[in-house]
Length: 313
Image (cartoon, rainbow, N blue to C red; front, side, top):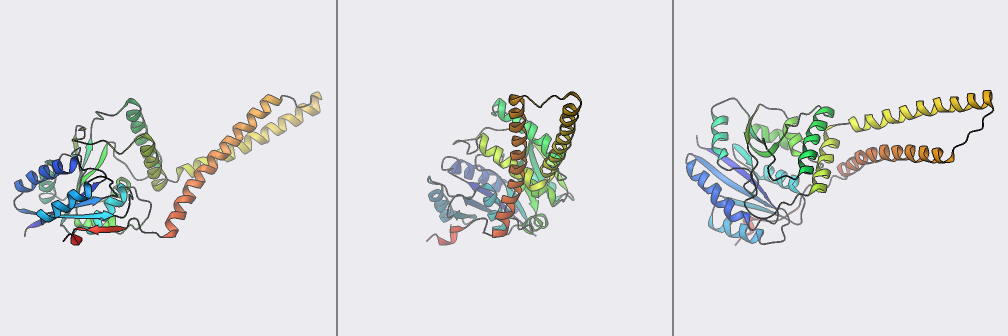
């Protein structure tokens, strides 16, 4: 029986990369003659000609589908939309900038067809093109998340992977609003084989990620897959209560025995500022968890579709 692969490609302002990607993925599709394909492009509120190019591709190629959002909802929303729209026996996700080599799809498919793996995922073993601070931040992020979370996150893991329909259905059964796909892929389980490759520069255009976006994304993963920060804030509160109690006893005893009044205005102010800072830090941690809960209970849709290839006349 002929199998079908759904390829999900999130796009945001990728007018330069799209034609190059389409050409490259077509080479792979021609080589995999015994497999049917559907290319599902997600236009995540692009402000350039991305949508126009997708309309043209959908007109000339029946294998091309697209979903265009009403605004920019983020890559996680794009991944979810693609997964929900996919109908293939296998589902692949890759970036349009060719940092995910399309030719690896051949090896991925052969692995799933000839083994008992449910997923073939990729990870980059180098960080060529990253700044020093981004490399350092990324290194420490993986160390921290794997220390405090019960859900393992593989160092260098990319979204580029090929999954069985069973695994995709398991992912779609998770209805949370705050999504971190790398964590979700790991949490649902299933047997995964990892392929490694050297990090590749973008084929065109510029990256949409900066340090602060990456930092916010990392916080999303930590809050979504670990409650250790709440434990840290609780322990900090207990420790400061103990230290405060000891200091109160020390001051009382010192005053009663030596008749020495408490002095030291500068040191008192420093202590107040320090303790206040710790309190605000702990409140900030609790606020982050509370804000995520607030977003979940509002039950808003993760994305809103404005247009699909079916609207093209």
